[in-house]
Image 1 (spheres, rainbow, N blue to C red):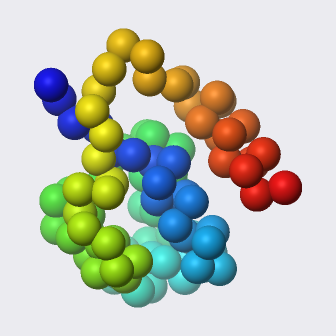
Image 2: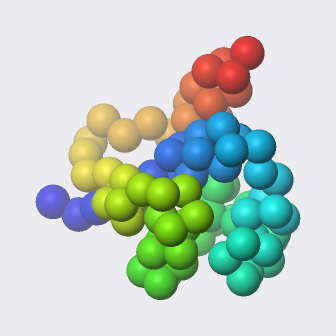
Length: 87
C-alpha cells in the first residue's frame, strides 16, 4: 500500500512547538513558502526534507507518512480537525 505524507502531523508538530512556517523553514534550510506548500498538500517534501523534519521534532521519519487508504480525509476536513484540536 502506498504511503502518503501526513501533512496534519507536520502542522500539529509545528504548532505544538510554537514554530511559524518561516521559523521551521529556517531550521531545515528551506523557505516558508515550501513549508506552506507541504502543509497545504500542494507538494510533498523530499526524503531528505522529511529526515530534517524528523531531526527538528525528535521523531522518526515514519511519523510523517500514513498509509494511503480509501477513507483518507480531504484537505478541508483535515484543516478543520487541526483548527478544532487547538481551540
